[in-house]
Length: 121
Image 1 (tube, rainbow, N blue to C red):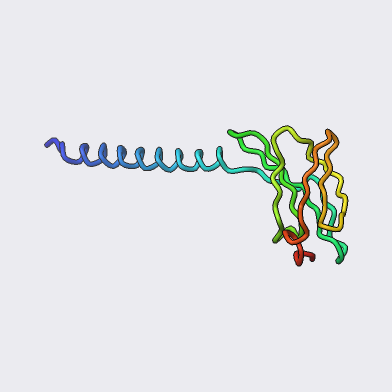
Image 2: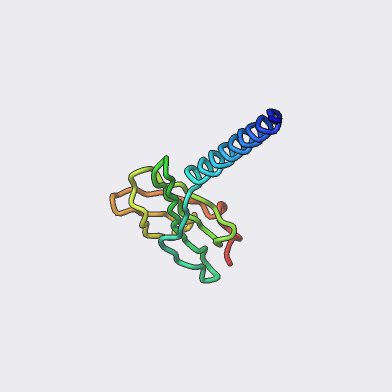
């Protein structure tokens, strides 16, 4: 006696398992390719009177590298995104109105104190 039905069910089970595995693998690969890798590349912690200044670098497999300056605490801060191509090592100059991030190539970003006030750790 030949059992044709059993072979058909096994083939269907293998097909469904392969389809499910392929979808799962594609989803995991997609997430890993587009998830950024973030690290703090320089930090100047708060001294209680002034905010902490942290420079973060995010790298994506597709999308390149971006930099942000966080003013305040690492957990909560005012974020300043740096334009592409700017060096990620600003000097901080405190002014009466807030602070200036001064970059080696001559760029300057002014941040009013109201943006980061109260975020001292």
